[in-house]
Length: 160
Length: 174
Image (cartoon, rainbow over all chains, first blue to last red; front, side, top):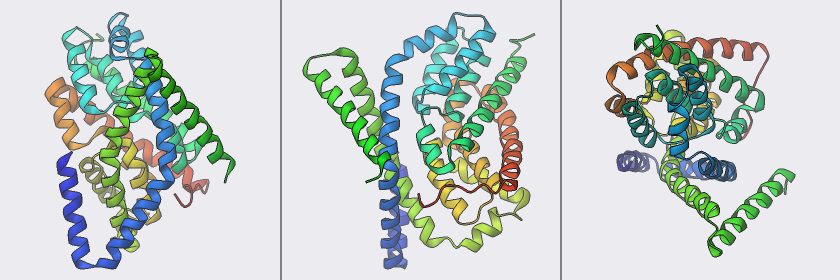
């Protein structure tokens, strides 16, 4: 995290030394763009805060461990689609699930949908891409995740 | 003020009011929701300012011809490789990918490249991938990447071509 700031700061500084006016213009563009999308971000945060309340980690754990593999894969991709968590939370969680005996293919479905399918990020995505394309992209991503999960299952010997 | 903006202000106010009441009267679900909201807000406020400043710098410094040449209609395999590399090194996942691709698109990147960027930014950020492998094992991560990346590229090309035929344009002035 800090190193993102360091790099951004450094690039900003270099840009400022080379051309002051352009850099100020860049910051203005950044502010305007940020302001335009900020209310949508707040909307999304409201969704996240409620959804994470309805589906806390323990519930996710429960759903993914207690069913047949295929139902678990479907449930996992559903949960992955509706929730949003940063990778630094998701992967340790999956690590725990793995030690509890949750199959790799279930975790694959969960992590891939988590990263690619964003029902929660829908308000933001549609601002840029429009409703129709956002829906298409998310559906495609969902199926990619399912394919990846099945192939993961084959490679780890969980299907045959 | 637009009607949409009014609706947004209305439900955001209701939400904040609900949180304040919850904290005043020790209403537990409301408090949990409040803590969720704050922790994610902090997380995003850490990432987003950097992302938008970099987007701003990109807009003023990178010439349209450059993007058109490397990521435009004629870019080919090199364009896809380049955009995957780019997506792999930029932090922030999907949320950052949307505004970034929006700028790329307006500078002349083609749609299939835009969708490839989004897919790649979601599944294959290099630091995240290393982190993933440390928890899930190299085999898991390798399978996930080797299967999903080609699928992302193929579907992006199909979707890009379909939308280009239908004269699709991304939203204006965001």
